[in-house]
Length: 93
Image (tube, rainbow, N blue to C red):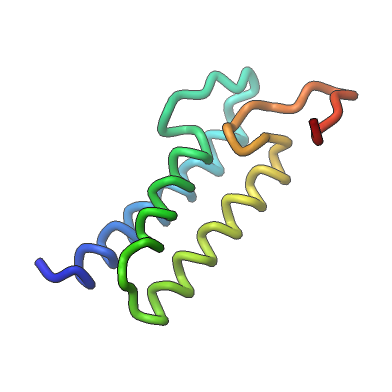
């Protein structure tokens, strides 16, 4: 399998898992996070893809997924580790 094919396949998997993560964050009121339900887990995998030599098209898709993760965190009140912000808690330590 070529590097391009591997990166494209990994990107497809990560994209699907981020979509699933969005649903998990909506449904998981107690925020019982596991490693794979943490936005940081997926951010690490995305950043690993960015370390590879990607085509401009794939790199653009990878950067869009990073933006999506940031939006999920803001939308669901999570920090980068998936932990929910406590009401009234200062988000910027």
